[in-house]
Length: 219
Image 1 (cartoon, one colour):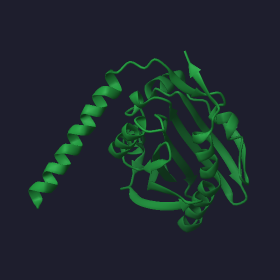
Image 2 (spheres, helix red, strand yellow):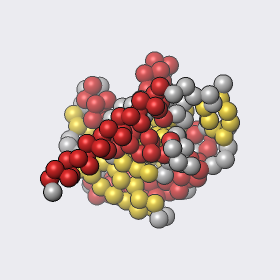
Image 3 (cartoon, rainbow, N blue to C red):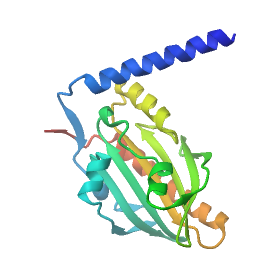
């Protein structure tokens, strides 16, 4: 039985790496992008109003190989939330998004072990990770996941598999990294509730954006 399972795993690994070879080596004639940017599309999210867009430096955008992004603060009835989305139109950029488990410690943050959780929003399941990140007396609650078309995962490798799979189906190549951050001040239960309440409003709009027809051929 163990040998059969090992063979299946080996077969999947071989298929994945062969697929990656074609994803990276096959020249792309056209790249499909969005006519409307994330910043334009997500001006308001349910009961949450946009407070400010936060621009990223050119070096950061180049390092992350971003095709589009949103970094913004929103304020709702129960508090403020920070949202980051790094968006990619091509499966060739499957490895471009950086995990917070790598980025935040590199910036001096202390990060707890991630807790894997699941949330259902309008029939869509979000598989996400939750961490606490601290620096200089400040602690944030961070929820994050990788999005490949309408499939979610908190794991980098699984996202690569999902994106590879979607490349050869009608779901296409677009994928993203999503991070929701709330300042951990007061009770953790209230902060967690605020983050999840924001995601309940945000996620249907994000799914609409992913599936929207506002595409254009990029040069």
